[in-house]
Image (cartoon, rainbow, N blue to C red; front, top):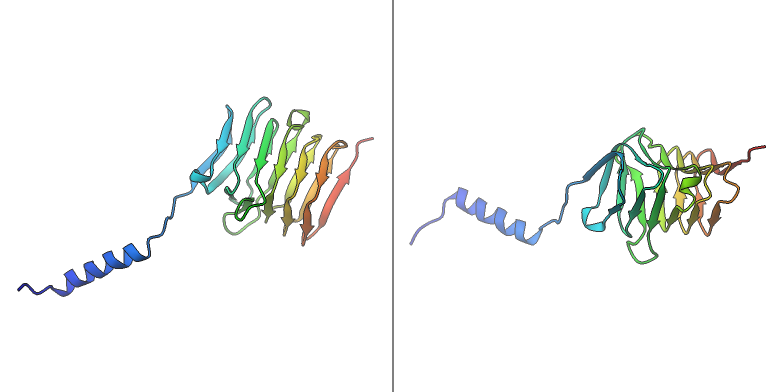
Length: 183
């Protein structure tokens, strides 16, 4: 009969513990820069880590699936001059989460210009930003979102046709909603 050494017993214990406590950890999908073609951020590639501002130019669509998590480094954000479709849902873990990746505030989601008018942000949890959502000359649609713990929850400048409905906007340090019309 062969006696196992301490090193073999330790290795066997690590293997057994690993089998019982297997963590399905996935590395972040790093994203930055300009998206040049229609793109879908999928749940199986989540979380997405924005390490430099992501821009969606006019004529391009970025779709984000339910349950996706998007983490932003301080000073970065998501700017849509094209179409942003955030299609979370109200199922358990179905909201799309936009959050800081660590310390420091991210810039937020900016819908900019009339080419972003078809943008929809639905069932999202948005926090830790300077402006959770900023609609600048955009008539986008924001509904069923939880927008909290930002400086400004939603900022609208020149967005007279924007549709903002059924959102929970709370605990933003400066304003919940800011609106500035152009004269």
